[in-house]
Each structure stands twice: as structure tokens, then as C-alpha cells.
Length: 289
Image (cartoon, rainbow, N blue to C red; front, side, top):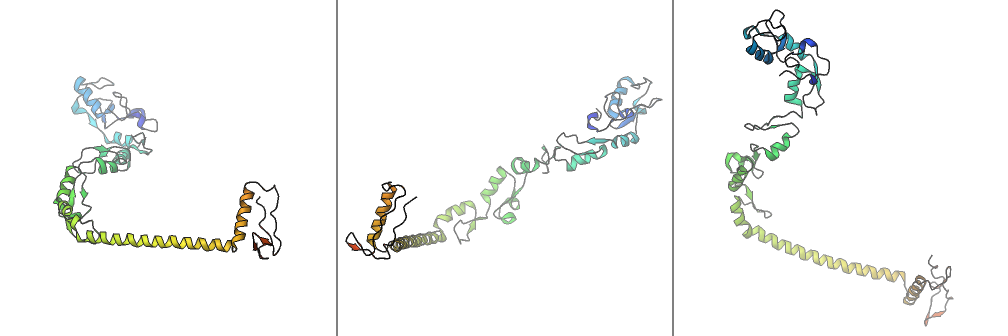
């Protein structure tokens, strides 16, 4: 019934230990005997009510002679203690422990901040409790806030409160671009299919797709033209181009000996019935490695 000894960081003086419960004095009270032995208030009241004696010396006493003293409370309050929650690293004087539990401890359960909610939850779990579980959390209409036209000036609780608000909220907007029509959900569902902006948007979208298709076709034709010009620049003479391709294919099939070189065409010699220009016959490409 007293304060657990394990809560304190240092050895507790013997006179601050209740001999009835063997814990540290909670609301230390003198027994009223000639020795005035100290006990926890609840412990000594229960003892005296049943026996009317001092638990230590057995001298007669009564409840009217019991005397709670502030001196013992201050002594206990000066003792160094840790937080009563094992996950918390707080340390300080015992007199500051309750303030820590009520305000700064992230692990000690406290009442939910919503008025009327009786759930105890730690500070770390409070945001999730408010957003997901608490039935008394108030939400504001995301469409129109306090001016949405719903009950309670756009505020509602989760569950049935949200469903009831959505059914009467007058801040639903037409989903079609540029349309400014506003109304309830039923009104918008009836309005959207025949909305003039909906039809115009469909026409504009069709024209945009058609224009993009034409641009894509022109881009493809331009790419083909560039590839043809690039091929002509690489092989200006068609016969030389054919010979180059044949040599590359033969080399790839390993039909040329390793380290072999391609045959050179003498300047002005006729190849396949066509005279090869001097600039083109100087040297064919080196063999592939």
C-alpha cells in the first residue's frame, strides 16, 4: 500500500520504511503512541481499526490520535527515483514524478484528449488513437469546411457521423474541368453526365489525341529520312557498299585467316564491271580483331 522500494535509485533510510507493508511511506503518519512510529496512512488506519494498538510497540492508540505529517512527505519527496514506467529513462526527485507522468512521459497512459472519451492512452499512441479509433474525434469537412452546408458547421465524428454529413453536405463540386456547379452528392451525380463542360472536354480531348497522332507519324517519317541519308553518307558508291558488307560478313564467319588482311583494289581497277575511284580504293578497312 506504500511506494515500491524498487522505484528509488538510492538506499531508502529505515525510518521512511513502513513496517506494515515494507514499502516507502506514502502519506507518512505517526501512530499516536509515546514513540510516534511512522507508517503509511492507509496501513496504520487499517491496523488501528482492527487492533487499536501501535503495530511496533503495541501501546494503545486510536484513529483520532493518528497524525499525518508533512515532514515525512518532504523527506520522501527529496529521494531520487526513476519513472514508474520501465520504458522511460526519466530520473529525478520523487516529488516531481507525478508532474512528469501527467505531462512529459511518453509511455504513461493518460486520458484521451477528446472530451468524454475514457480511454487511457500514452502520448506515443495518442495520434493514432485520435485518427483511427476514438469515436469522439471531430473532423472538418474537406470540401467546404464550416461553410459546406452540412450540420454542426461542417464538423462531424467518425462512422455514422461522417456518413450522415456526406449525405447532406452541399459542397460537392462538379468533377468536370471549368464547371463551377456546386451541390449535394445526389445533385452532382445527376448533373455530371450531361454537363456542358463534360461534353466540351471530350471534344477537346479527341482533337488533342488526333493532333498527337499526326505529330507522331511525321516524327517517324523524319527518322526514316535521316537514317537513309546517314546510310548514303557512309557508302557513297553502291558497289563499294556491297563489297564492304560482303567482306564484313565473310570476316564474321571466320573465313579469312586470323590476322589476314583484305585484298586491296589497285587504283582505277574495274570491280564487278564498275571502275573504282582512286579515293575509294586506297585501303579497305582493317580486319576485325
